[in-house]
Length: 211
Image (cartoon, rainbow, N blue to C red; front, top):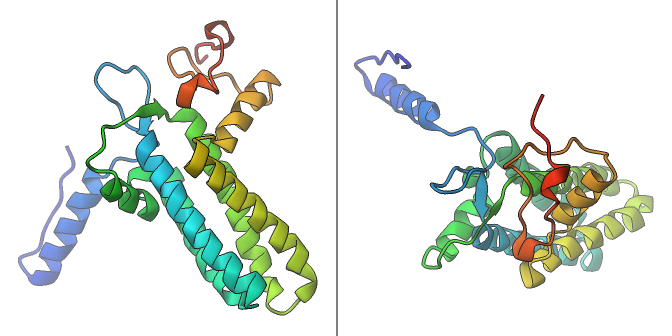
C-alpha cells in the first residue's frame, strides 16, 4: 500500500489527487482479460487509432509536399512520437489516438488480439516517426532531404492505410518474420502473437518458457 501525504490547502489537494491518479495508472502494454492467459488489445480501437494517425499523416504530407509547409510535418510527427512514447512506456490506453479511437468505437463489441506483436509494431512506428520528425527539423533549412522525408512519409502512410483498411498490421507481420529468422527471442508459452485471422500466429512448439 502506498502512503500519500496531503496538505490542507488547494495546492496540496491538487498534488494529492495527481499522486493518487499516478499511483492507479497501469504501466503495461495490453490488459488482462478474464479467460485469456495473455495480454490483449482491442483490435477495433487499435484500427481506429491507426485511422486517426493516417488522417493526420495525410495532412502532414499535403502541407509538406504540396504546400511546402515543412513545419507541419515536424508538428504532426512530433505528436506521433509523443503518442508512441505514451503507448510504449506507459500504456497504449492513455495514448491520445487510442483515447479518441475508444470513443469512436465504444458501441462496438471488442475484438481482442495479442498485445505482444502489436508492441513490436508500435516500436516500429515510433522508430519511423522519430526518424521523420528528426529529418523534418533539418528539412526546413536543407531541401536536399525532401526525397528522403517524402519516401519515409509514404512508407508510414502505407502501413497505416493497410492496417486501417485491410486489418493488415505490417509491424505484426514483421514480428512473425523476425521470430522465424530467430532475430528475436521466442515468446513465452501462452504469450504467442495473435493477429486478425491468425495471420501472425506461430507454432506452439516454437514458443518457449522464459528462462
